[in-house]
Length: 373
Image (cartoon, rainbow, N blue to C red; front, side):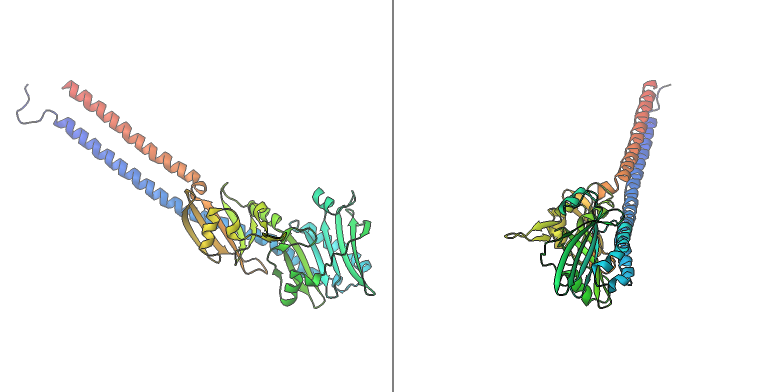
């Protein structure tokens, strides 16, 4: 039967094609909508994850500082404070050694008296520290004692075995060390509470670090050294991605800890004096840019720097005895959300593949329908 005049021959095919196009457009719009909504969820989840990371770092730093400070509190009540001679002080070596065993993050623990006497105990934990002090082979601990007897100043090193028995005693060169002139002693004498010093060079090892200190009545000051390298290793363990940056710093920008401890110090031009670096001196364009915006910021923001988006969190950290400390965590968004980005891309391309497959089936169906007619 001939076609009815005025009725298009391909109207059924056209209707089918238009219907499929409408379905494809709807599928595309739904895919894009799903993509954007998933992106928002990812960013929200990323912010929550980031906050958890910052909180975890804060807890780890608290675990580094708080136990030694509690140990110093107990030591301040010890009869060691009232001793006047090395013979008396030898009886308290086990107590000092236990503090160091319980707090392996510490480099040494010591006490300075108001008359200039001084006692330090440190573990000889590696060949480097043994070589630095030319320690005997069996030495596990080293004590440094300065005493004043009858107006004479005695400066000595004691090397001890694992049982804290003295295996060698030797006179040390008097380099003019006076605990009362060290920054930790002066600061603790002025303060009515525990404190953490800003980074400085330790007298005996020439390492950079901070001192945890507190006064013991009006007779002495107790201290414990924490090197920046050890503190930086603790910080490095909290890195969430390979390119993330974690910096602990003071309110004026002096870096206390950084995941790369080799970049923490530099020699002052024109002298042999070592100084800790500031935030903007770590050799990173990213960090220098952030430093220009201010040190004492508490914020979470996103910056497009060095070719990628960075999630940045800066906040004050409640380190006991050190109210002026800040933590900055900088993480590339692509690394932090890499798995979520991958799932989002896969979901989008699966949606596109489904739409293209439907388009192919529609074209084949319409072609066969047209051929049959």
